[in-house]
Image (cartoon, rainbow, N blue to C red; front, side, top):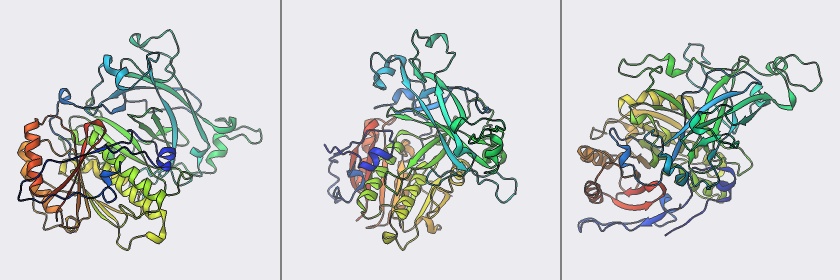
Length: 502
């Protein structure tokens, strides 16, 4: 058992979803015709510390649960400066299913005296850079926590309190504060006001901030987001917005709503189609002094599983985030900067975007160690996932400006010879792609085609769901016939495999 703790940077400046521990398993011996080698702990990121399944059943969900905060129902579009706004929330697992009430307190490790999972909120500030070319296509809402925003949003503060009216099933004789109750539902009320006692009218008192005086220092394109999360680990937060001044109404001309969609794609008004935005903090290259940059990822909670993030992705992010944070702290060799990276069957594009952000942090950390080769990330999936992937890439254009990020359609088993982006890769990340027995050979063929001997490292995140032990064993026996394999097990029942070819 290897037990590691985050560096001081990770502990103090990098909030994380999972506890940071792992152990390395000894893989079964491969067939005699295959030589298996394992990298040392110092060489392999998985030793320190997506295409998504098409048909999965919550009943087959195994291991510890990672809960996500979701709107319940979708939050109100309008907020008024200085007035309280109610937000109803629920927590769900990766299948977007509510937890079993009986197991909720145990899963969240609540004390017996607690009846609520506490929630808190904060303001994320950023400048809206959408539609700068005036073509009417509102394509992005840039936000970068590492860049100071001298606008109206920087003059704001937020406070929260418990919901003032709860359902009969959640009534309590004591005030529990903002949070999630035994039912798995709950929420909070928040109020946005100006700092230093400012008001929304034209005040005459010296030093008071007013809507009129504040707007003179900014443009109407100044926006902010509201982040809602929990101080406890194991809860994935969400972001509300973007809200724009001076009307305090969210921008509606977003790319998803303006771009024409195929008839087969569900409408935003469909009750089974819910848009959820999640904030992901990326390590600051300026130790614990600088704020983290924030990646804002859009999920589609509908019948398309590739529209949301599955558990293995969170584990992979934790592994690499802490590894990069340690490297920044110790000024070691960059892990991603100067590399060619491919996110295979990416789903939402989260892993590829996040690794691009980590590479950006490494590039900003030390000019003396900047690589000569340009860093590039290619995010791939089937055609029906491309709209969401490209939306997320565009909306996070400021997260990694020094990294080339692109998207490309890639079907398993297809020819890779015609694309230069698929050749000479340094790293391939594949999260939750092992789910279909009929696709085993196509997946293995693609992994083999992407892997340049003695150069490419493939990181494969896997959590057993509907596959039987026999079929799982069959796949990994076949993969050990083609690759050198190193395996580790992490929280949530997720295993991460490092594949190489000699």
